Length: 266
Image: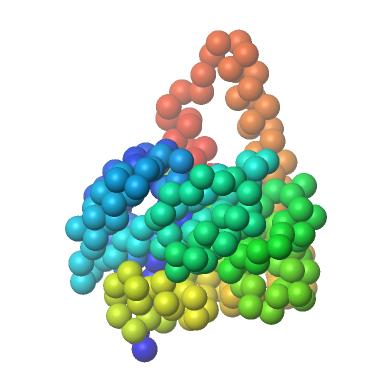
């Protein structure tokens, strides 16, 4: 079975991303990828606009690259759930209802970049998602995931053995790092086959030297390395955020060139 590389969880100008879909396709093709699973924010869409979005994704897909449409649903407490392949708008912000909605429409539901303080709440959901996004390179950074998110998955998987893990870029910005990707064993390069392979777990996550088997725990040595790198990165991120807030209060702003460089880091 052939293997294709691609990224999960990307945004476009259909919601709050920098890239129009055609430019996103071209940029990812230049990176060597063969597909992208989108996660544009659902609140930007009604049924008519969702149909236009699906049509543009289909028009921009061919034998060399596929754009799989999907929505990221905003829930209570600013929790987000990505529905790969689900582009049906939904009015509720209740996580259990959103997960059920995504499943009902054949999508693959992912708890996206879960906050540490939300872990106990997520563990109590009645409806079970398909996956936990254990590495989101926009929020966690490009250097390491948070080991605690893997622990969240392990606790939830003890009750739901089908629960797996995903690895998302959460791509918004043109200069954002986009090296975190998956390698997918797929029957054919088209949207239905890509979604079927993700549902079947026929993929691994890749970032540089790191390889992640969906649903597998971290090795002890990997866990130690990630804990150190993640703590260092998050401390740096907090410092940058504090500086930005002080500049905002003073009426100043970071120069665009510095913003672009920070997005390469983050």
